[in-house]
Image 1 (cartoon, rainbow, N blue to C red):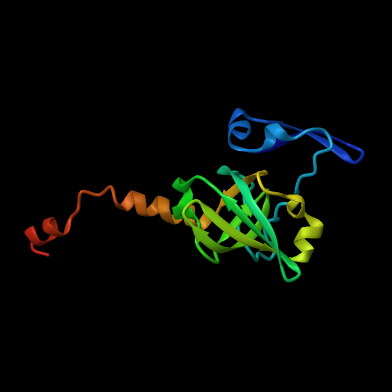
Image 2: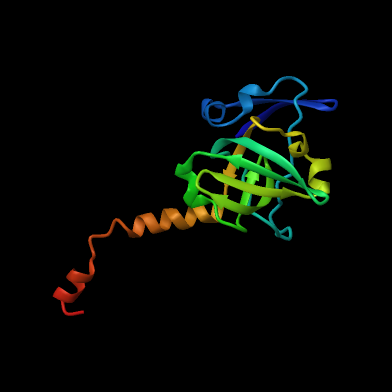
Amino acid sequence: CLTVVSVGSGRFSVEASQETVRRTIAPGYKTGSRINLERAIRAGDRMGGHFVTGHVDDTGIVDYVHPVGESLELAVSFAPRFDKLVIEKGSIAINGVSLTVNTVHSGRLSVNLVPFTVKETTLGGLGPGDRVNLEFDLIGKFVLKSRGNIGHSDLTVDKLIETGW
């Protein structure tokens, strides 16, 4: 939720809303901070991978980063109220990088960072205690929203039986 307001040679400036400031790690950014950027998909382009909008849901805290073979395992703690949005082998965006969830426990998840991701993003530089932006799975959010709307119906099994169904 950042709006580019000026572009110069090798740099750009953005403005952020109060919602972005409240929900993200943006207040910690300083001139020269490294961030992950990716171009938006254009209508008609081939789509693959995970759906990432860039709209951060909350922040998390890095618990650990451990080498596993040539990759790194990154574990992040988050508010347990988001547990229902994190599933094993589902997707999560951490600091704007779309990743597959390895393991899930209440209020904690882990992902693998392959060497390319470590080299080409800011994630390889994370350490315990670092705050990160989290964008939970978009499709999961839509499914939960639709399930919640169905649950608000006054229709019950007893009412169906009572009316002859």
